[in-house]
Amino acid sequence: MKILSSYSIKGGVGKTALAVNLAFALREAGLRTLLLDLDPQGAASFYFRVDSAEKFRMRDTLSLVEGLRRNIRESDFPGLDIIPSNLGYRHFDILLDGMGKRRKQLRRVLEEFKPDYDVILMDCPPNITLLSENVFRASDAILVPVIPTVLSQRTLEQLSGFFREEDLSCDMLRPFFSMVQKRNKMHREIMADLPVSHPGFLKTVIPFSADVEKMGLHRMPLLAYSHTSEAARAYRALCDEILSLTGK
Ligand SMILES: Nc1ncnc2c1ncn2[C@@H]1O[C@H](COP(=O)(O)OP(=O)(O)O)[C@@H](O)[C@H]1O
Ligand SMILES: [Mg+2]
Image 1: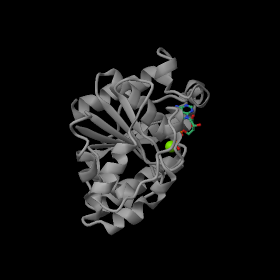
Image 2: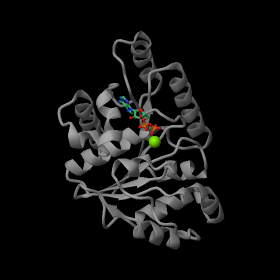
Image 3: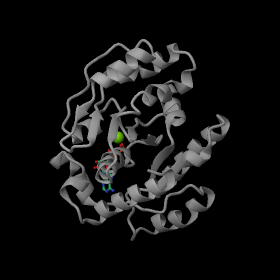
C-alpha cells in the first residue's frame, strides 16, 4: 500500500484539485483508493458530495482507527472511498500530542487499512503542525503544488528547509507546477530555474484552466466530467508519473 499526500504550507495552490483528480485517476488505473480529507474546510469531501464525518473520540491509536473506519464513505465511483473531513480534526494535534511516538502515529494508524486499499491519499490543510509532521512521516511521496510565482518559490524553500532541519528525507518531496499560464513570462522564468535546485520536481505541469474551477459547480472531479480537456490530460499524466516513481 502506498501513502501519498497533497501538501503545501500555502493555501489556494491546487492541493485539493490535485487530491480529488489524482484519487479519481488512481482508481481509473485500477487501484483501490482511499481519500482522507484532513482539511477541516472539507473541500475534497464537498467535491465528492459526502457529508462531514461523524464526531468520534480520538483517545489512542485504536479509537482513531475505529473512528476513521466508521467514517469511510463510498464515493459515486466504485473503487474510490472517502473519509470526509470533520471540524473535530482541528483537535488532531492535541490528540497526537497525547500519544506516544508522536510523529509516527499516523503511519501506524494508516497501516491498519492496508488489507483494503492499494493507495491512501491525504488532502492536507495549509500549515505546519504536529499533524503535518505526522503526514510527512507517514507518506511515501508528498506532492506539493507550486504556482510559478516568487511567493510560492519561497514557501517551497521554507518547506525544504524544514525537512533538512528535522532530518526528513527531501527525496519524498515531489513538487510540481500548478495553475501554469504559459504566456506569463514570470511563470516561464521560474519554471526554468526552480527545478534546478529541487531535483525531485515532477515533470508534468498542471495548466491554469477554467475547467478545473468548474468542479465546484459539478461537484465531482474534473476527470469525471471532462475527459479530454488539457487539464484532465495533465492530471492523468501526473498520476502516471507518480505511479512510475512510487511503483503500483
Ligand atoms: N489548474 C487550475 N486552474 C484554474 N483554477 C484552479 C486550478 N487548480 C485549482 N484551481 C482553483 O483555485 C482555487 C484553489 O484551489 P484548491 O485546489 O482548492 O487549492 P488548495 O487546496 O491548495 O487551497 C479553487 O477555486 C480551484 O477551483
Ligand atoms: Mg484544499
